[in-house]
Structures are given as C-alpha cells and as structure tokens.
Length: 316
Ligand code: GLY
Ligand code: MN
Ligand code: MN
Image (cartoon, rainbow, N blue to C red; front, side, top):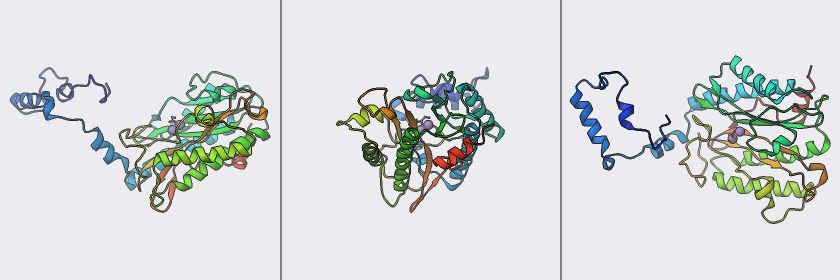
C-alpha cells in the first residue's frame, strides 16, 4: 500500500505482522504509548514536503547512479534503433528494450513504456504497443529503467523504414524539436536562474518560431492546446515524477535533475501543412543541473539525425 494513500496507517507501519504485535519495542507499554501519541492528529503532520526538499537536490553519488541509469536506458534505446523495421511489432521492440536494460543490470522498468509507431504517436499515453510498424513511419519510444532505486526517462523518435532514413518532412519536424530540446537544455543551469515554468514558456516560444518557419499558421493558443499539450518536463529521481511538492516556480539549483521533453503532435487536419499531418514525435533527455553547466544523463541515446540514421542503417 502506498505511503501516500489516505488509508495508510502509521499504526500498521509500526505494528509488525508477527502475532505478538509489538516486537519493534522492548515493552508493550512503549508501543502503546507511541500509538496513543500518533493517533492524535494534533501531534503529527506529513513529512512529504521536508522529504521532497531533501530529495530535490541530489548528491554527487546520487547523480552518479542516475547517470548509470541513463546510460543503461540510452544503450538499450540504441539497440532498439538498430532493430526496428517495417513489419515488426511495437511489443517486440518493447521486449528488446526491457531485455537490453536487464542485461546491463537494471532493477526494472521505471514506468509502463510507450512504443508508438505511425499515428499512435498522436496519443501521448499510448501504451498498448500492439501495432505493426509501417514502411515510412516514425516511432516514438518513451522508456527508461530503474537502477539502484533511481529512475531514468528517455524519449527518442526513429524512422521505421527499411533504409533507416527519415523522410524530409519527418526530418524537418524532428530537427525543429531537437533544436528546442537543445535550446532549453542550454538554459538549465543554476547561474541563469530559470524556473521550470519559465523554461516551459521558453519552449513554447521556441516551438512557435520553429513551426512558423515550417509554414504553420498558428492561432492564439493552438500550439499549447493542440500541438504541444504537455509540460516541458518534471523533476526526476527516486520517482519518475519526483518530489511533487517542489513547485514549478522554483529556480533550478545545482544537483536538481529534471527531464526536458518537447513534443509535437500534428492532427490529420487541413488546418496544418499537409506534409506534417498525422506526425507525432517527442524527444526527452534527463538533465542534472550544475551552476555553470549541466550533465545530460541520457547522452548514450542517439538524438542527432545523422547518429540515429547511422544506427538505424545497421539494421539486419
Ligand atoms: N514517461 C513519462 C514521462 O515522460 O513523464
Ligand atoms: Mn518519458
Ligand atoms: Mn518524462
């Protein structure tokens, strides 16, 4: 039972499951006194906020573990890029990702992964992963392992075509997204003093300019309502969506870890340029904030077009 559940009882936590009922305590009266004290709500309050503050800035050793988690997932992502091809099932790529993580020592997957080829990528939380990959599609893969208790969270978009190349509209849209990811990553240092919400606003501005250059005519709010309807990222750590009481208005500090994950999802609708209709893609890195710079924990997962296509070209 989750510690966050309202039904969670500190009494159940303290009372061991053994028949004696009080063997964490030498005397039964000690146990009874603690139960009495804690059962009065005036004496207790949740430590969630205090714990989140402690968890929000990671130590050097925590960053080291998170770097390993990112490296494992990044290498597994690269193996997926090598394997996907038309006719393969999304679930087969998922199985390969999980296998490659396990081989490298991962504890488990950090969350239910998304393997969304073709139009499935327009559903942000697509997790059925049961379709067959097409000949000229892209697939967005959002997957990450947990390693020694810490999560990684990576998204990459790859061509599923047999030659391993993006079509030119796919490449143009992907590069717009990649420039946005890099632009936002460059801002994620403590010295520049951005908050997560300011970073999000910058990502909206960047994507707006990129899409305008690609011929999109966007009305007020269309980008955030339809084409990019999610946030730039979230805190990452022991949990996938870590330290939820740390506000998005908090300035980035050294040791914080966040995801940066711009996405574009173009409906099959005449309101948008024809070449991009039906395309959905996202790219997501895990970033540890430093004072002057930052460390991309997910660097092993290829993200430059040339690197993705080179790995995809190794398909057998
Ligand atoms: N994989 C879930 C997320 O990106 O937040
Ligand atoms: Mn993700
Ligand atoms: Mn994420």
